[in-house]
Length: 419
Image (cartoon, rainbow, N blue to C red; front, side, top):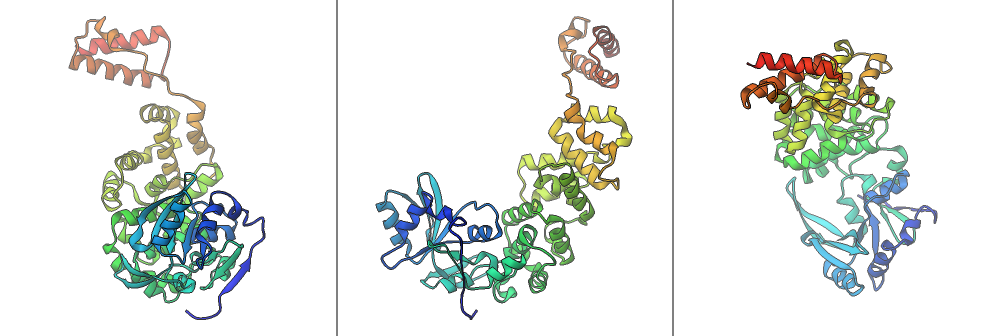
């Protein structure tokens, strides 16, 4: 790319974090004697968007060995977490900062890159993925932009740097990152050039590790515009690289609206269930395709288990039994997914009552114990198990009574039938 770099001086209060320890100390150690370090990547992007700045990554003109020498002399810890790519994790006052030497790509294969170190801020910026991720912030509060990021921040546009096809060919994970960043930061329609390049690369996505795809998909699902991003992924033919079934895009859109209207925190696995899980085999497929953990898989299985029965028409008795059997968290998941698949109004009172049940009613503990049946002459073993199961079913059907007379009657009946 050619053209003069754009610069923007930020107000002192906007970059006050640059003067806070330990970041200020790390920058002071890395700057000077012919070397320069700047804040780069997501921290600069979020700062310009008015979002919280999380992890602060740094880039430097200094070679890794110089970085190590300087920070260790200053009493900080240097961890060579990616030294072959020029990355040193500097730990100062217990806080980690990734510090990476400026680089240029020498060779890429769609998954990995061979790099050489350099001192050119423009070339380092041009090897990054999107314009809004390629800006740097120097210690004096000046934003340096070599790729049009400032303009795209203003438009909330997510664009590849330079030729979109080339950027994607360097790392095919950028296809998924395009939709993830569009979901998180984009407004309006996705960039047409980037969208079409992603569509052209869809047959190459099988070369990516499932773990990398999983991370991007789950981040996309909880982003602000997840429904729009997933819809554009499906339109581009990319959905099939992850999901075998037809996406339930309306359900995902409704779930996002339900969460918003009820002030419910977004959840990646719940949204994954809404868009891609109807049956147990769907959950099993996703477990394999996305390398889900056992706990994540169990959540999907729970949400796929007869979710269509947890509806207002089934009555509160059924809802209470479900809540009793699976617990409040799984109940909420299942109810929200079921609501998302319905066509009811977001303000429907029946669904509102269903969702609020855990806050209105706490399931009691089953009050009949094994000893109650042993006293009634039921032998230990299968008969005792059958008696307990029958009594619990009768207790639930009776509306979870606590009256001792009724409980005794339930136990007597279950004991007689177990013989």
